[in-house]
Length: 263
Image (cartoon, one colour):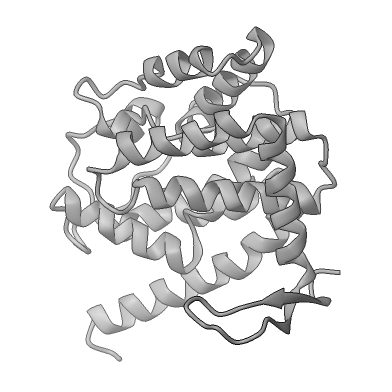
């Protein structure tokens, strides 16, 4: 039903004209309904989580800013809808984990280590039960690519875990993934490409996380981004990844053609 359309009332901002019926994808309406269901379980917690994200991630480059967290939240709720997850309590876990997943990202800490203190303190302050807090923290600490590089998973691959992880990985590939890759590389003064610097094979967790090794933005496609399609865990995530993966393949092929002067 992803391509079905439904009618709903719409009025343009600033317009005094009467509301009119317009067509919108049913998937959009379904996702909006899921978002409302998640917020209904604890609307104050969701609202405050959005505030934490805006505050803690506002000074970062655009590859891992608040907009990224909000996109991952929307993707996660959309995937949840496609996977049939509808319990407000379960959706709350998905939404909060997706929103907060990069607040303590190691790439933006001084000691190159993941910092969960802000998230853990927030989850206590909003009054979540201990089991809910532990589940959200487990998803966040276990969902990173670095953990699968090291074959170490800190969280059981529950449906909620898979949904949040797939949503984050979808935002890392496709058109937005390309933009994020070069944005992050630029923020670290990385070269676009250097034929003398080859992509690293069999990356260890330590090498992947290292801020010292010289790398190029284009190598990130080979070391990580091209691998994500086959690492998706939900059927909905796998389907969406196909299109985004193909877009990246075409881009990188064109990049090499232009770099070499052939195009």
